[in-house]
Image (cartoon, rainbow, N blue to C red; front, side, top):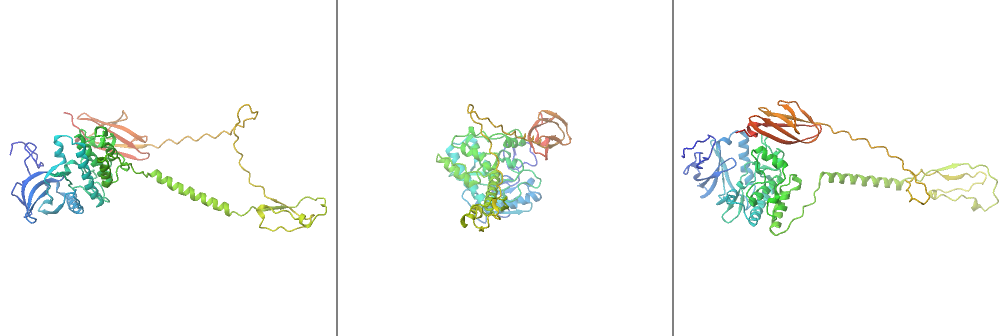
Length: 488
């Protein structure tokens, strides 16, 4: 239409914005939806304004792109989006009407929201903090409804949040959402999501839960308030590294938002809000000028300490029980040496006084010549108390304390290994020390963080920080053609 060159995979012209999918106004999908206008790009397809001949109203029709609609993984995502979106009904979540397939073309019809995405609203610059709090609260309430349904959205961003003409926010696009109990990576093992909005655990390809969505909403709030995302680098991989390692620039945000962002953007998911409900409560408090205190954090250490405390208490109770119910010590009876017969005494005087430990045992009166002397067994020796040195000048000699044996030296931690796999190849340096050119055998490294640098004459240097664990091998796989930046 405009004469500009295009790639076959493009669905929209980069020069004039024309729709290149072939669904021009007037086209009909599934004998039901009449295309009226092209609205824009979704996560996995194009979105149109269409007239639904069955419902007799205008809807938004999302049509999956041909280049992303093949294979079992794409089919699974499509079915998952329809199924999950139908489970959520909330004023701040876009309603889904129907979904189906016509030949190789898959489509989803949903509520048409007249308005603009929050990404489009940012075109004129950052928003006032009061508006950010209002929009963020609505987004958090919609996210809370998603989480209560047991769903993790995993792709929350300003492009997936619509604001209608009255300012009401709708959460959209469940294309890569998953039930909270499902596996979190695709069949290829790659992490899914948008790099600028992905949580640290998503960047590592680890399971995502409601706290991952909280992190993404924190990125959205920062972007609305400052006009930029907190982390963006030259490549997607470098952006993900910043999510893992760089502290969020919270000081750039308005003061009212900083306490919320400090928790929402925490690297450790355990320090974030647990779900959309908790974050909505924090935003509501921030709008009222309050700060919600962080709930007590039960860590793995505290659980271990609780178990130890219970075990110690149980052991103490058992010891006390044994002490209380222990039988009295046995009495040793030894004949006394011959004695001079005592003077005549009353019969009562010839009875030995019973020991306090043997009051329940009657003692018989015996003649003095044959009467044994009853003596209790000597008590166990007590540990001698450590003498306390007295002040000088009192004339007492200080008793030196016995020297304690030296503590054994701690065993050095076992090494771990780093396996670097680079395509096509690269020179590898670890902590500034050259280690050779790939392919390399496993590199033994002490546990802890290390700086890795990959260099290749055709690409810019590729840095990465890794953490080695004792006795384990960390595999670092890099394809410079996709992960690196080619030199100009």
